[in-house]
Length: 418
Image 1 (cartoon, rainbow, N blue to C red):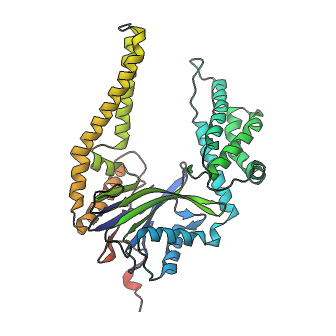
Image 2: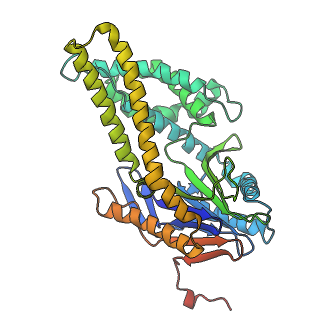
Image 3: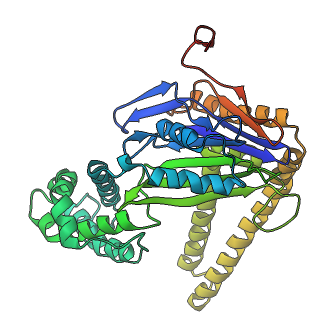
């Protein structure tokens, strides 16, 4: 994981990122504090590119891809940041190396792992106080038709290959992914052979879907100024490999600064990526996890109240439905009121200050927010997946990209070019 942030107002834009890279899986991993996550396209381009999540694309490190794009675009500046986005993805799409059958297979097995995780975490109602394996088996089997039905509704990014072709190409390797799970759940019975075709179909639908993404994907940020733009903008895409020569991506965040109050634009913004809890704590006055916990406590409290009222027959049974409706309205009004308090006391005052912040202060703010996230991980029992030096890139219309802080893997004094 990582902590990254974009802060922008009319004066400029800042990208900041820690240096932690996590290699391996949830059971066996290693953290390196030397990763490069922010890149520029040269002094002629007031644009920065930042990555998080998966550090490579179809087996190619993003750093190599970005630097290749930098060489390809040369000194030719583009009118808008959106044009840089278009040109970047065109460049990637024209790389022959990304069309790798082996990497496509790895992607598909990643979707198989995702489905396996969904099935492993199946919840079920127990028919007795003790654990009953049959209850769990029935719950897993009954869940699969629903998953298949939902996956069939997903819009495809391109025409899907036939189920037979998909099975012939990947079926045996998908079987390996599910073998241990089904040997454990169904104790070696032939249940898997009866349902595996449905699993193949679900995985195929996930792979071809334009909206279903695997657990591990790349977040890519392209931000700055185009040649004809006087205000900065930021675009963040989720990218999950290649599907039949089409890059699977979606625009996840768009933040465009403007001096007009129009829909889709803003006067300033703080945009966190990856681990965002400390940024939300500063902006909203509460972390997302705690807010979710409070919402759950409220829901359980209302449920308990209505159950007690019904059990003790304090109201007529015919009134319970009406009480439930009132409960839903009250619950919604509480959440609305809470959101209003957050905006008035925290979000709006913070953004009001950021509106007029000098560019130097924007850089300090961005670095501080990343360091806060790293410090929070250091004093908690969780793994320190945020850390290392913080790189800070400031982009303004007048000066272009300027490194406020930047680590080097070499000593600049002994590597000067003559």
